[in-house]
Length: 372
Length: 93
Image (cartoon, rainbow over all chains, first blue to last red; front, side, top):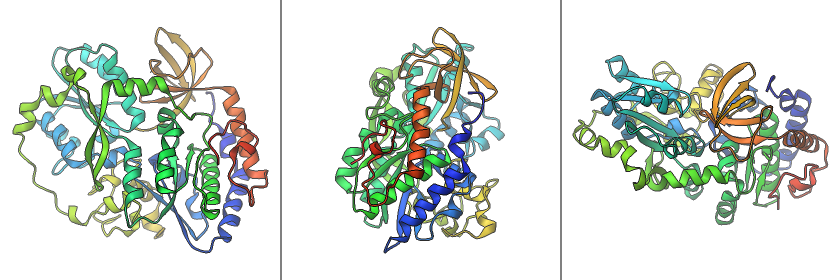
């Protein structure tokens, strides 16, 4: 692609969709709260200034859509422990500064641990091939990055490459949010790229069970506004269906070849997500066939003998959990923009550029006092 | 990390493509892309892997979808995206 898709950012079309949203919400007899489940949706909403133009009675919450944020402190602690043992660790850039119970990988690196950043899963193969020492790939992210890890493990990787999987399955967290008795969410804007892998058909049982509509949307401003219009229409009309508003990437069945790779390598396990607690079938862990590349087996002794870290101060006040389940917004947190800042994060949502707190902070919510 | 970026294939060697992302070129693995791709195709890329071929028809249909979303009379209708001029937006009630 030689230029950005400017047609998908057309101002006149955006204004027309915004007016349509405004007209629809003017007929609403109550405020409506919707949730999107992707950090990239929040980034686009912030970057294109959409939030300040949403109708006053329409609240858009960010859900558990940031894989960096939901990676739990004990998962970070395990990787920090390996790095502190002298093991060479590779991970994606946004994991570096995520706080564990006591330290981040960046803290460990500052103290001399070997932690290196990669931007493509294939790099860990190149790096492992160039050495004989063990290499640990701290593999994080949702379906979209898990398929890349799976593909690496299916391509006859070098024997000295070990995967520490913190991969997560995002539909499992939507289930937790929808099942929460406190939830006000009346519809979900599902992440288009995750659905590129899974297909939109995966949401049909969710809609049938919870009676709430799901619209799969892309990440350009017109994608998001179109998705919201289609969601609000369903809510106002009392309908609940899966609608695919991202047909240039998403089909009903998704990328079957990628799903096949994913489930040949990974199995679902129950897991703890940061701030959300227990998520049934929310984690993706290596199947027994890949035990030879499983870092939790290769370094079982190191992980078992690691000293449990002391907890950091401030953690009790952190609202990441309520923010990721859509119960609160970043500006509801007493630490937001004060003790918790991008350069000194308390919670994970302030670390990643996909985290709600970081996005709101970077786009001036603290200064502007935006409260919704 | 979970950042999907569309790009255009400029060269293919074996199972690896050189992809142009608006001026930045990176090697991309083709192991799990959903269909066969050739030079000139657009693909959606996540962490070094192409996960979807995006066809010119897909792009044209997206523009038709936006056109319909901004101009068609949606009031009082079910959100039947199939009536919005794309024929490709599926799954509506």
